[in-house]
Image (cartoon, rainbow, N blue to C red; front, side):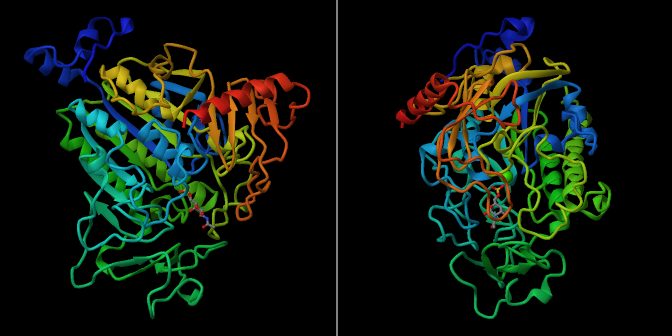
Length: 511
Ligand code: NG6
Ligand code: CA
């Protein structure tokens, strides 16, 4: 359903955002509606980008976006790991409302079901070309473990709004290590079919555990000792599909090339591109041109590679004259992690670099480091360089863009999403009243106060040593003064604890 979109601040162009008023206007609308690109990094922390103030790394291309847009200091992903975070961003629904949105296997069935309404459906229904390129990690096909990787896999992203997709099924550390384009494995030789299992190995196939001498590129520090592809052992087993296997060194190249191609092909028409980089998830094996360039080993080099991707996207927009009227968002799916399973010397070479910036915890954590992510929102036609302290969440892209393009969302869709377009554009200092954060447990922040519900889960992640933020007692932090969540004030301010715990309960009761 279409409706009027009214933006006093858009002035003369406002009428161009009222879709489908007349044939002539329609043409005009189509020309004037902005393209939207969400560049979703994997595991890049707030402190991993130089625009956020860390002097230990230089990411000039993200700075280029920040120089023409709004840079947020209190922006959040919904969850502290990838699958739930991306699920929430694309559906406008909190992942914790379902119990099957945890970190997905490489052979997971589609977690977002075709009957669910996604942000991509919304753009497509409103005349946009829609594409998903890069890291997916939201499952493919109908049922976990039952895909036939040698045929077209359905359902696939086309069934949830993406007309074009070129994806890594999950993560670089999970099988199958192939690209899937519009539901089909790319470059597959029918004489060498591909098989995937998360249950058991295929007979005679080497694994990281049985054949460590074959690990020529990356050796695991924990887990990641199953099938060996390109000299790196992974999570999960696979066999066959030799011609389709990716080469880790060229993943960023491949994803970026497809993104630039997508922009080129749709330059005449509004498009929505969800671009998930593989950088800087493990295994971090950047292209030789970045190796040794950060002084921090593969983790830092992968950040530079991420920045390069951002630069290539910006160059393409410049080349086609699309810069002015394209919204570019640069953000990350969860907080940072240093050693996430491979011996890439990330801990040893970190030096003074603080991937988590001023925050406590990181990926997996309910402390701010888990979900407080970098976020830059740029639309040169309407934004200028600015820093915003507004409390914003990726879950709100959905309704904010609905407002922007002047459309309604079907009943039951994106019910946890809110319109904060003016905050994203830097026109308003006020974002959300509160956000719900998800680590192992849930928390609520109103930007000033942060409540973490009691949880008996462990205090440290046993693999990465991340402080998870779990405690058997309620926690309350005054973020304004104590951004590093050091002083639990729950005993001192029981009313505040109750107020925020009640908010969380109310959100839960909506299930
Ligand atoms: C964990 C993996 C980690 C990473 C993560 C998913 C182990 C021990 N650790 O289970 O390496 O793959 O899952 O990361 O296997 S995410 O960013 O995609 O959520
Ligand atoms: Ca991630």
